[in-house]
Amino acid sequence: MIYKLTYKPFGERAVLIEWPAVIDENTLLDISLFKEKIKNEDLEYIVEIRNAYDSLLVVYVKELISFRNILNKFGELYHQEKKHFKLRPKLWKIPVCYDDIFAIDLNEMALEKGVSKDTIIKLHAKAVYTVYFIGFLPGFMYLGGLDKKLHTPRKSTPRLKIPKGAVAIGGEQTGIYPSESPGGWNIIGNSPIEFFNPKNNIPCFANAGDRIVFNPISIKAYKDITTLVEAGVYQLESEVIGD
Amino acid sequence: MYSTIQDLGRHGYQEYGVPYSGVMDMHSASMANVLLGNDKHAAVIEMTMTGPTLKFSCDTSICISGADMSPKLNEVPIKLNKQISIKKGDLVSFGKLISGFRGYLAVLGGFKTEKVMNSYSMYHGITDQSTLFKNSSLLIDTSLKSLGKKHAVIKMRNTHFNVKKIEVFKGPEFQKLSQEQQELLLSQDFTISKENNRMAYQLEELLENNLEPIITSSVLPGTVQLTPSGKLIVLMRDCQTTGGYPRVLQLKESAINILAQKFTGHTICFDLKALLI
Image 1 (cartoon, chains in turn blue, cyan):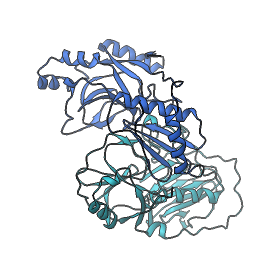
Image 2 (cartoon, helix red, strand yellow; image 1 turned 90 degrees about the horizontal axis):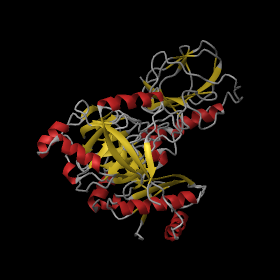
Image 3 (cartoon, chains in turn brown, blue; image 1 turned 120 degrees about the vertical axis):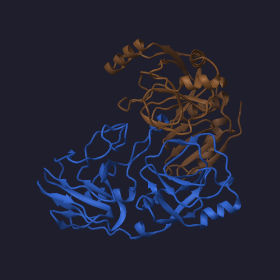
Image 4 (cartoon, chains in turn cyan, blue; image 1 turned 90 degrees about the vertical axis):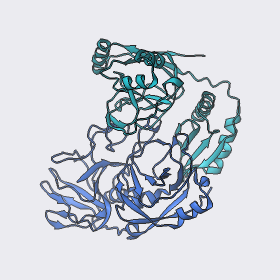
Protein backbone atom coordinates (compact mmCIF):
# COMPACT_ATOMS: atom_id res chain seq x y z
CA MET A 1 0.00 0.00 0.00
CA ILE A 2 1.15 3.52 -0.82
CA TYR A 3 0.41 6.10 1.86
CA LYS A 4 0.11 9.81 1.44
CA LEU A 5 3.16 11.12 3.26
CA THR A 6 3.70 14.61 4.63
CA TYR A 7 7.20 16.08 4.75
CA LYS A 8 7.90 18.82 7.28
CA PRO A 9 11.15 20.60 8.05
CA PHE A 10 11.99 20.07 11.74
CA GLY A 11 14.60 22.69 12.59
CA GLU A 12 17.48 23.50 10.29
CA ARG A 13 18.67 20.00 9.49
CA ALA A 14 15.94 17.43 9.98
CA VAL A 15 12.91 16.33 8.04
CA LEU A 16 9.89 14.77 9.70
CA ILE A 17 8.02 12.37 7.43
CA GLU A 18 4.51 11.64 8.65
CA TRP A 19 2.08 8.86 7.80
CA PRO A 20 -1.66 9.16 8.54
CA ALA A 21 -1.98 9.47 12.34
CA VAL A 22 -2.89 5.94 13.41
CA ILE A 23 -1.11 3.22 15.35
CA ASP A 24 -1.19 0.02 13.34
CA GLU A 25 1.11 -2.65 12.05
CA ASN A 26 0.67 -1.85 8.37
CA THR A 27 1.84 1.69 9.00
CA LEU A 28 4.81 0.37 10.98
CA LEU A 29 5.67 -2.03 8.17
CA ASP A 30 5.57 0.73 5.57
CA ILE A 31 7.68 3.02 7.79
CA SER A 32 10.20 0.22 8.40
CA LEU A 33 10.48 -0.54 4.68
CA PHE A 34 11.04 3.10 3.84
CA LYS A 35 13.62 3.36 6.62
CA GLU A 36 15.48 0.34 5.21
CA LYS A 37 15.36 1.79 1.70
CA ILE A 38 16.88 5.06 2.88
CA LYS A 39 19.55 3.26 4.93
CA ASN A 40 20.33 1.02 1.99
CA GLU A 41 21.16 4.04 -0.18
CA ASP A 42 24.08 4.84 2.13
CA LEU A 43 23.58 8.56 1.57
CA GLU A 44 26.58 10.51 2.87
CA TYR A 45 24.42 13.43 4.00
CA ILE A 46 22.27 11.38 6.38
CA VAL A 47 23.34 11.51 10.02
CA GLU A 48 20.51 9.70 11.70
CA ILE A 49 17.19 8.08 10.98
CA ARG A 50 14.64 6.91 13.53
CA ASN A 51 10.95 6.13 13.57
CA ALA A 52 8.02 6.45 15.94
CA TYR A 53 4.41 5.20 15.52
CA ASP A 54 3.46 7.28 12.50
CA SER A 55 6.63 9.11 11.59
CA LEU A 56 10.21 8.93 10.47
CA LEU A 57 12.78 11.53 11.49
CA VAL A 58 15.79 12.02 9.26
CA VAL A 59 18.63 14.26 10.43
CA TYR A 60 20.95 15.39 7.63
CA VAL A 61 24.01 17.54 7.03
CA LYS A 62 22.54 20.78 5.75
CA GLU A 63 25.85 21.77 4.13
CA LEU A 64 25.57 18.74 1.83
CA ILE A 65 21.92 18.84 0.77
CA SER A 66 18.96 21.18 0.85
CA PHE A 67 15.54 20.33 2.29
CA ARG A 68 14.09 20.63 -1.22
CA ASN A 69 16.53 18.12 -2.66
CA ILE A 70 15.88 15.72 0.21
CA LEU A 71 12.17 15.89 -0.65
CA ASN A 72 12.86 15.07 -4.29
CA LYS A 73 15.17 12.22 -3.41
CA PHE A 74 12.87 10.69 -0.79
CA GLY A 75 9.72 11.16 -2.83
CA GLU A 76 11.33 9.18 -5.61
CA LEU A 77 12.72 6.56 -3.25
CA TYR A 78 9.38 5.96 -1.52
CA HIS A 79 7.67 5.07 -4.78
CA GLN A 80 10.42 2.78 -5.96
CA GLU A 81 9.59 -0.92 -6.20
CA LYS A 82 10.15 -2.41 -2.76
CA LYS A 83 9.98 -6.12 -3.36
CA HIS A 84 13.70 -6.75 -3.04
CA PHE A 85 13.66 -5.28 0.44
CA LYS A 86 12.99 -7.99 2.94
CA LEU A 87 12.67 -7.16 6.60
CA ARG A 88 13.70 -10.00 8.85
CA PRO A 89 11.99 -9.27 12.13
CA LYS A 90 12.80 -11.45 15.12
CA LEU A 91 10.63 -12.92 17.83
CA TRP A 92 12.16 -12.55 21.31
CA LYS A 93 11.09 -14.67 24.28
CA ILE A 94 11.34 -12.53 27.37
CA PRO A 95 11.34 -14.34 30.74
CA VAL A 96 9.05 -12.61 33.26
CA CYS A 97 8.40 -13.51 36.87
CA TYR A 98 4.81 -12.55 37.78
CA ASP A 99 5.24 -13.53 41.44
CA ASP A 100 3.74 -11.25 44.13
CA ILE A 101 7.18 -10.12 45.26
CA PHE A 102 7.49 -8.21 41.97
CA ALA A 103 3.86 -7.81 40.89
CA ILE A 104 2.94 -5.14 43.41
CA ASP A 105 -0.11 -3.90 41.50
CA LEU A 106 -1.42 -7.25 40.28
CA ASN A 107 -3.74 -7.83 43.24
CA GLU A 108 -5.40 -4.45 42.90
CA MET A 109 -5.74 -4.89 39.13
CA ALA A 110 -7.36 -8.30 39.60
CA LEU A 111 -9.83 -6.91 42.17
CA GLU A 112 -10.61 -3.94 39.97
CA LYS A 113 -11.30 -6.11 36.95
CA GLY A 114 -13.05 -8.88 38.92
CA VAL A 115 -10.78 -11.62 37.55
CA SER A 116 -8.09 -13.78 39.11
CA LYS A 117 -4.44 -12.81 39.08
CA ASP A 118 -3.81 -15.90 36.98
CA THR A 119 -6.20 -14.71 34.30
CA ILE A 120 -4.29 -11.45 34.01
CA ILE A 121 -0.96 -13.27 33.80
CA LYS A 122 -2.32 -15.68 31.16
CA LEU A 123 -3.70 -12.85 29.03
CA HIS A 124 -0.48 -10.89 29.33
CA ALA A 125 1.73 -13.87 28.46
CA LYS A 126 -0.49 -15.12 25.63
CA ALA A 127 -0.18 -12.16 23.29
CA VAL A 128 2.51 -11.48 20.73
CA TYR A 129 3.63 -7.86 21.00
CA THR A 130 5.09 -5.68 18.27
CA VAL A 131 8.03 -3.38 18.98
CA TYR A 132 7.07 -0.05 17.39
CA PHE A 133 10.16 1.86 18.44
CA ILE A 134 12.44 2.56 21.40
CA GLY A 135 12.11 5.86 23.25
CA PHE A 136 11.26 7.54 26.59
CA LEU A 137 14.22 5.89 28.39
CA PRO A 138 17.28 4.27 26.82
CA GLY A 139 16.05 0.78 25.87
CA PHE A 140 12.33 1.35 26.57
CA MET A 141 10.29 -0.47 23.91
CA TYR A 142 6.95 0.94 22.81
CA LEU A 143 4.88 -2.23 22.40
CA GLY A 144 1.58 -2.76 20.61
CA GLY A 145 -0.77 -5.69 21.12
CA LEU A 146 -1.98 -5.51 24.72
CA ASP A 147 -5.29 -7.33 25.21
CA LYS A 148 -8.16 -4.84 25.68
CA LYS A 149 -9.17 -6.58 28.90
CA LEU A 150 -5.82 -5.56 30.39
CA HIS A 151 -6.07 -1.84 29.59
CA THR A 152 -5.63 -0.12 32.96
CA PRO A 153 -5.37 3.60 33.72
CA ARG A 154 -2.02 4.90 34.94
CA LYS A 155 -1.74 5.45 38.69
CA SER A 156 -2.97 8.88 39.73
CA THR A 157 0.28 9.49 41.63
CA PRO A 158 3.36 8.17 39.84
CA ARG A 159 5.90 6.24 41.92
CA LEU A 160 9.27 7.90 42.36
CA LYS A 161 11.13 4.65 41.86
CA ILE A 162 10.12 1.81 39.62
CA PRO A 163 12.71 -0.96 39.72
CA LYS A 164 14.76 -1.96 36.72
CA GLY A 165 13.11 -4.79 34.78
CA ALA A 166 9.59 -3.97 36.01
CA VAL A 167 6.91 -5.20 33.58
CA ALA A 168 4.00 -2.81 33.69
CA ILE A 169 0.73 -1.69 32.15
CA GLY A 170 -0.16 1.96 31.55
CA GLY A 171 -3.38 2.76 29.72
CA GLU A 172 -3.46 0.74 26.51
CA GLN A 173 0.23 -0.07 26.63
CA THR A 174 2.52 -2.55 28.27
CA GLY A 175 6.26 -2.19 28.66
CA ILE A 176 9.38 -2.99 30.59
CA TYR A 177 11.41 -0.39 32.53
CA PRO A 178 15.00 -0.94 31.32
CA SER A 179 16.42 1.02 34.26
CA GLU A 180 15.17 2.37 37.56
CA SER A 181 12.99 5.40 36.90
CA PRO A 182 9.93 7.28 38.15
CA GLY A 183 6.71 6.10 36.52
CA GLY A 184 2.96 5.78 36.80
CA TRP A 185 2.33 2.37 35.29
CA ASN A 186 0.87 -0.65 37.11
CA ILE A 187 3.57 -3.20 37.90
CA ILE A 188 2.69 -6.83 37.27
CA GLY A 189 6.06 -8.57 37.11
CA ASN A 190 9.79 -8.29 36.53
CA SER A 191 12.20 -9.55 33.92
CA PRO A 192 15.75 -10.48 34.95
CA ILE A 193 17.34 -9.71 31.58
CA GLU A 194 19.17 -6.59 30.35
CA PHE A 195 17.17 -4.43 27.95
CA PHE A 196 19.86 -1.82 27.55
CA ASN A 197 23.60 -2.10 27.91
CA PRO A 198 25.53 1.06 27.04
CA LYS A 199 28.77 -0.92 26.85
CA ASN A 200 27.54 -2.97 23.90
CA ASN A 201 28.07 -1.72 20.39
CA ILE A 202 24.36 -2.21 19.76
CA PRO A 203 22.88 -1.44 23.17
CA CYS A 204 19.44 -3.06 22.66
CA PHE A 205 18.69 -6.53 21.29
CA ALA A 206 15.33 -5.64 19.76
CA ASN A 207 14.63 -3.38 16.81
CA ALA A 208 11.51 -1.60 15.61
CA GLY A 209 9.35 -4.21 13.86
CA ASP A 210 10.47 -7.14 16.03
CA ARG A 211 7.97 -9.14 18.10
CA ILE A 212 8.19 -10.17 21.70
CA VAL A 213 6.38 -12.66 23.92
CA PHE A 214 6.50 -12.92 27.69
CA ASN A 215 7.43 -16.29 29.11
CA PRO A 216 6.27 -16.72 32.76
CA ILE A 217 9.00 -18.04 35.06
CA SER A 218 9.27 -19.00 38.75
CA ILE A 219 11.28 -17.10 41.36
CA LYS A 220 13.84 -19.90 41.21
CA ALA A 221 14.25 -19.50 37.45
CA TYR A 222 14.39 -15.71 37.93
CA LYS A 223 17.32 -16.10 40.30
CA ASP A 224 19.09 -18.56 37.99
CA ILE A 225 18.73 -16.24 35.00
CA THR A 226 19.91 -13.26 37.08
CA THR A 227 23.09 -15.19 37.89
CA LEU A 228 23.67 -15.97 34.21
CA VAL A 229 22.95 -12.37 33.17
CA GLU A 230 25.39 -11.04 35.77
CA ALA A 231 28.05 -13.47 34.53
CA GLY A 232 27.38 -12.26 31.00
CA VAL A 233 26.51 -15.70 29.67
CA TYR A 234 22.71 -15.62 29.44
CA GLN A 235 21.40 -16.35 25.94
CA LEU A 236 18.03 -14.84 25.18
CA GLU A 237 15.86 -17.07 23.00
CA SER A 238 14.87 -15.68 19.64
CA GLU A 239 13.82 -16.77 16.17
CA VAL A 240 13.52 -15.09 12.81
CA ILE A 241 9.89 -14.77 11.76
CA GLY A 242 8.32 -14.81 8.30
CA ASP A 243 10.35 -14.74 5.11
CA MET B 1 27.99 22.74 42.45
CA TYR B 2 26.91 20.93 39.32
CA SER B 3 29.67 20.17 36.84
CA THR B 4 29.86 17.46 34.21
CA ILE B 5 32.17 16.38 31.42
CA GLN B 6 30.63 17.07 28.01
CA ASP B 7 31.65 17.00 24.37
CA LEU B 8 29.53 17.58 21.28
CA GLY B 9 27.25 14.70 22.25
CA ARG B 10 26.29 11.15 21.45
CA HIS B 11 25.06 10.78 17.89
CA GLY B 12 23.51 7.80 16.15
CA TYR B 13 22.00 6.11 19.22
CA GLN B 14 18.68 7.94 19.37
CA GLU B 15 16.92 4.91 17.89
CA TYR B 16 17.78 3.12 21.15
CA GLY B 17 16.30 5.92 23.22
CA VAL B 18 19.67 7.45 24.07
CA PRO B 19 19.67 11.26 24.49
CA TYR B 20 22.20 13.37 22.56
CA SER B 21 23.64 15.11 25.64
CA GLY B 22 26.68 17.28 24.93
CA VAL B 23 27.56 20.84 25.94
CA MET B 24 24.49 23.01 26.45
CA ASP B 25 26.19 26.04 24.85
CA MET B 26 28.14 24.69 21.89
CA HIS B 27 29.28 28.14 20.86
CA SER B 28 31.12 28.87 24.12
CA ALA B 29 32.53 25.38 24.53
CA SER B 30 33.89 25.40 20.97
CA MET B 31 35.52 28.75 21.63
CA ALA B 32 37.45 27.29 24.56
CA ASN B 33 38.62 24.35 22.46
CA VAL B 34 39.54 26.46 19.44
CA LEU B 35 41.69 28.80 21.54
CA LEU B 36 43.69 25.81 22.78
CA GLY B 37 44.05 24.36 19.29
CA ASN B 38 41.95 21.36 20.37
CA ASP B 39 39.72 19.29 18.15
CA LYS B 40 36.15 20.62 18.40
CA HIS B 41 35.08 17.24 19.81
CA ALA B 42 37.46 17.48 22.80
CA ALA B 43 35.68 16.97 26.13
CA VAL B 44 35.39 19.97 28.46
CA ILE B 45 34.04 20.61 31.97
CA GLU B 46 30.61 22.21 31.88
CA MET B 47 30.02 24.22 35.05
CA THR B 48 26.57 25.44 36.05
CA MET B 49 26.26 28.71 37.98
CA THR B 50 29.52 28.16 39.83
CA GLY B 51 32.64 26.11 39.24
CA PRO B 52 34.74 23.63 41.17
CA THR B 53 38.23 24.18 42.55
CA LEU B 54 40.70 22.22 40.45
CA LYS B 55 44.18 21.21 41.47
CA PHE B 56 46.48 20.27 38.59
CA SER B 57 49.03 17.52 39.07
CA CYS B 58 50.83 18.19 35.79
CA ASP B 59 51.72 21.07 33.47
CA THR B 60 49.17 21.89 30.77
CA SER B 61 47.16 24.74 29.25
CA ILE B 62 43.52 25.60 29.82
CA CYS B 63 40.96 27.99 28.44
CA ILE B 64 37.74 29.09 30.15
CA SER B 65 34.77 30.27 28.14
CA GLY B 66 31.05 30.90 28.45
CA ALA B 67 29.65 32.29 31.71
CA ASP B 68 31.92 34.59 33.69
CA MET B 69 32.27 32.92 37.09
CA SER B 70 35.22 35.11 38.19
CA PRO B 71 37.91 32.49 37.53
CA LYS B 72 41.18 32.65 39.46
CA LEU B 73 44.55 30.97 39.13
CA ASN B 74 46.22 30.64 42.53
CA GLU B 75 43.84 33.34 43.82
CA VAL B 76 44.75 35.78 41.02
CA PRO B 77 41.90 36.67 38.62
CA ILE B 78 42.37 35.30 35.09
CA LYS B 79 40.78 36.18 31.78
CA LEU B 80 38.12 34.28 29.93
CA ASN B 81 38.66 33.21 26.31
CA LYS B 82 42.42 33.18 26.64
CA GLN B 83 44.93 30.35 26.77
CA ILE B 84 46.30 30.04 30.32
CA SER B 85 49.49 28.10 31.15
CA ILE B 86 49.20 25.79 34.10
CA LYS B 87 52.05 24.44 36.22
CA LYS B 88 51.94 21.33 38.34
CA GLY B 89 50.35 22.19 41.69
CA ASP B 90 48.35 25.19 40.39
CA LEU B 91 44.84 25.81 41.73
CA VAL B 92 42.05 27.09 39.51
CA SER B 93 38.94 28.31 41.34
CA PHE B 94 35.76 30.21 40.64
CA GLY B 95 33.83 32.91 42.45
CA LYS B 96 30.86 35.11 41.80
CA LEU B 97 28.70 34.63 38.71
CA ILE B 98 28.99 37.83 36.66
CA SER B 99 27.31 36.88 33.39
CA GLY B 100 25.74 33.84 31.72
CA PHE B 101 24.93 30.59 33.53
CA ARG B 102 27.16 27.86 32.07
CA GLY B 103 30.93 28.04 31.94
CA TYR B 104 33.34 25.80 30.07
CA LEU B 105 36.83 24.79 31.02
CA ALA B 106 38.83 23.18 28.26
CA VAL B 107 42.21 21.58 28.72
CA LEU B 108 44.87 20.85 26.14
CA GLY B 109 43.84 17.65 24.35
CA GLY B 110 40.54 17.37 26.23
CA PHE B 111 39.52 15.41 29.34
CA LYS B 112 39.85 11.65 29.04
CA THR B 113 37.01 10.27 31.12
CA GLU B 114 35.01 7.15 30.24
CA LYS B 115 33.97 7.16 26.59
CA VAL B 116 30.65 5.43 25.91
CA MET B 117 29.01 5.26 22.46
CA ASN B 118 31.67 7.54 20.97
CA SER B 119 31.13 10.29 23.49
CA TYR B 120 32.56 11.48 26.80
CA SER B 121 29.33 13.29 27.70
CA MET B 122 28.19 12.24 31.15
CA TYR B 123 24.64 10.97 31.47
CA HIS B 124 23.08 8.89 34.24
CA GLY B 125 22.72 5.29 33.13
CA ILE B 126 25.07 5.70 30.16
CA THR B 127 28.38 6.69 31.75
CA ASP B 128 29.32 5.21 35.14
CA GLN B 129 29.90 8.68 36.54
CA SER B 130 27.15 11.22 35.91
CA THR B 131 28.60 14.36 37.54
CA LEU B 132 31.93 15.52 38.94
CA PHE B 133 32.13 15.26 42.71
CA LYS B 134 34.58 16.32 45.39
CA ASN B 135 37.94 14.56 45.00
CA SER B 136 37.10 13.28 41.48
CA SER B 137 40.29 13.00 39.51
CA LEU B 138 40.31 13.63 35.78
CA LEU B 139 42.80 12.28 33.27
CA ILE B 140 44.36 14.46 30.63
CA ASP B 141 46.92 13.84 27.91
CA THR B 142 50.26 15.25 29.09
CA SER B 143 52.18 14.44 25.92
CA LEU B 144 50.72 17.37 24.01
CA LYS B 145 52.52 20.66 23.52
CA SER B 146 50.44 23.80 23.48
CA LEU B 147 50.39 25.79 20.32
CA GLY B 148 51.82 29.29 20.57
CA LYS B 149 49.42 32.20 20.20
CA LYS B 150 49.24 32.53 23.96
CA HIS B 151 48.32 36.16 23.69
CA ALA B 152 45.23 35.64 21.60
CA VAL B 153 42.10 36.73 23.44
CA ILE B 154 38.70 36.55 21.84
CA LYS B 155 36.11 38.95 23.04
CA MET B 156 32.71 37.27 23.28
CA ARG B 157 29.85 39.39 22.13
CA ASN B 158 27.75 40.38 25.12
CA THR B 159 24.62 39.72 23.12
CA HIS B 160 25.29 36.03 23.61
CA PHE B 161 24.29 36.55 27.25
CA ASN B 162 21.98 39.55 27.07
CA VAL B 163 19.75 39.01 24.09
CA LYS B 164 16.12 38.32 24.94
CA LYS B 165 15.10 37.08 21.48
CA ILE B 166 15.16 33.35 20.94
CA GLU B 167 15.07 32.57 17.25
CA VAL B 168 12.68 29.79 16.31
CA PHE B 169 11.09 28.01 13.38
CA LYS B 170 7.58 26.61 13.22
CA GLY B 171 7.37 23.21 14.89
CA PRO B 172 5.53 20.26 13.33
CA GLU B 173 2.26 21.13 15.16
CA PHE B 174 2.50 24.94 14.92
CA GLN B 175 -0.35 25.06 12.40
CA LYS B 176 -2.69 23.37 14.89
CA LEU B 177 -2.66 26.53 17.00
CA SER B 178 -5.32 29.14 16.26
CA GLN B 179 -4.26 32.44 14.70
CA GLU B 180 -4.71 34.08 18.08
CA GLN B 181 -2.64 31.45 19.90
CA GLN B 182 0.13 31.75 17.32
CA GLU B 183 0.21 35.53 17.79
CA LEU B 184 0.31 35.22 21.58
CA LEU B 185 3.10 32.68 21.43
CA LEU B 186 5.18 34.95 19.22
CA SER B 187 4.53 38.29 20.89
CA GLN B 188 4.40 37.58 24.62
CA ASP B 189 7.39 37.57 26.98
CA PHE B 190 8.03 34.31 28.78
CA THR B 191 9.82 33.84 32.09
CA ILE B 192 12.11 30.88 32.71
CA SER B 193 10.70 28.89 35.63
CA LYS B 194 12.81 27.23 38.31
CA GLU B 195 12.28 23.96 36.46
CA ASN B 196 15.27 24.36 34.19
CA ASN B 197 18.06 21.88 33.72
CA ARG B 198 19.99 19.98 31.05
CA MET B 199 16.82 18.12 30.01
CA ALA B 200 14.42 21.01 29.60
CA TYR B 201 13.51 24.59 30.44
CA GLN B 202 9.91 25.15 31.52
CA LEU B 203 8.36 28.58 31.06
CA GLU B 204 6.07 30.29 33.59
CA GLU B 205 3.39 31.95 31.44
CA LEU B 206 0.72 29.58 30.18
CA LEU B 207 -0.64 29.44 26.65
CA GLU B 208 -4.25 28.34 26.89
CA ASN B 209 -4.98 25.74 24.26
CA ASN B 210 -7.19 22.83 23.35
CA LEU B 211 -4.70 20.86 21.26
CA GLU B 212 -5.07 17.11 21.32
CA PRO B 213 -2.01 15.15 22.40
CA ILE B 214 -0.14 13.73 19.42
CA ILE B 215 0.71 10.10 18.84
CA THR B 216 4.14 9.74 20.46
CA SER B 217 6.70 11.02 17.97
CA SER B 218 10.33 12.14 17.77
CA VAL B 219 11.61 15.26 19.46
CA LEU B 220 14.95 17.09 19.29
CA PRO B 221 16.90 19.44 21.53
CA GLY B 222 15.27 22.82 20.94
CA THR B 223 11.77 21.43 20.45
CA VAL B 224 9.14 23.53 22.26
CA GLN B 225 6.31 21.36 23.57
CA LEU B 226 2.92 22.66 24.67
CA THR B 227 1.12 20.71 27.40
CA PRO B 228 -2.70 20.56 27.77
CA SER B 229 -2.41 22.81 30.85
CA GLY B 230 -0.70 25.42 28.66
CA LYS B 231 2.84 24.98 29.91
CA LEU B 232 5.61 25.49 27.38
CA ILE B 233 8.60 23.19 27.71
CA VAL B 234 11.78 23.88 25.75
CA LEU B 235 13.72 20.63 25.41
CA MET B 236 17.48 20.84 25.88
CA ARG B 237 20.48 18.58 25.19
CA ASP B 238 19.63 15.74 27.62
CA CYS B 239 16.00 15.48 26.46
CA GLN B 240 14.22 12.20 25.78
CA THR B 241 14.08 11.05 22.17
CA THR B 242 10.28 10.97 21.86
CA GLY B 243 7.30 12.80 23.31
CA GLY B 244 3.52 13.07 23.11
CA TYR B 245 2.94 16.81 23.51
CA PRO B 246 2.38 18.98 20.42
CA ARG B 247 5.66 20.45 19.14
CA VAL B 248 4.78 24.07 18.44
CA LEU B 249 8.22 25.58 17.81
CA GLN B 250 11.77 24.48 17.10
CA LEU B 251 14.69 26.60 18.29
CA LYS B 252 17.39 27.57 15.86
CA GLU B 253 20.57 25.73 16.84
CA SER B 254 22.27 28.98 17.88
CA ALA B 255 19.24 29.84 20.04
CA ILE B 256 19.76 26.68 22.12
CA ASN B 257 23.22 28.02 23.00
CA ILE B 258 21.74 31.37 23.97
CA LEU B 259 18.99 29.85 26.10
CA ALA B 260 21.56 27.62 27.84
CA GLN B 261 23.10 30.80 29.33
CA LYS B 262 19.80 31.87 30.93
CA PHE B 263 18.21 30.76 34.16
CA THR B 264 15.28 31.12 36.57
CA GLY B 265 13.54 34.50 36.28
CA HIS B 266 15.10 35.57 32.98
CA THR B 267 12.65 36.57 30.26
CA ILE B 268 12.73 35.53 26.65
CA CYS B 269 10.55 36.05 23.62
CA PHE B 270 10.29 33.89 20.54
CA ASP B 271 11.32 35.40 17.21
CA LEU B 272 9.91 33.43 14.31
CA LYS B 273 12.27 32.93 11.37
CA ALA B 274 11.43 31.46 7.99
CA LEU B 275 13.33 28.33 7.08
CA LEU B 276 15.39 28.69 3.94
CA ILE B 277 14.48 25.61 1.98
